[in-house]
Length: 192
Image (cartoon, rainbow, N blue to C red; front, side):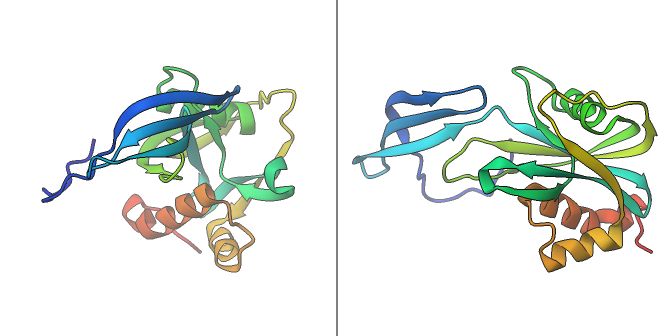
């Protein structure tokens, strides 16, 4: 939990009633009636998501491992950093280690937690915890039967150029790569 500076007003909305509109394997869509700070009521619809992890796997100090895969909702291919959802009660670091091995076939000798971001605060509880994965060693991937993707090492300067030109426009990947660009020098990460 983050300690914010003290504020004069409390804008907390209090739940009065809650119903599940849809429950699937990944998402739980909720509709709540809430009491607003002025005492009036309104409806809030939102998605309950278990959370996720994303990894920035460094092949070396100048190269990141990306994935190339098709994402059905937007009907297109994306370049992404590896990521995956948390299983119920799963430790985020354990999930990151599992997802990296399953999707890419790599194990990492060093892990660093970078940050946790809340992705869609107006309509979802989804949060994603980012890790830097270093000292990679390839074993073999263990992808699910319905996972089709390619992994590719990309020089960091090229990945950052792809962000600048819009080739990479997946939010988690943009956030992770720009975080690495900003903080990389303090981590010993360089760009040729």
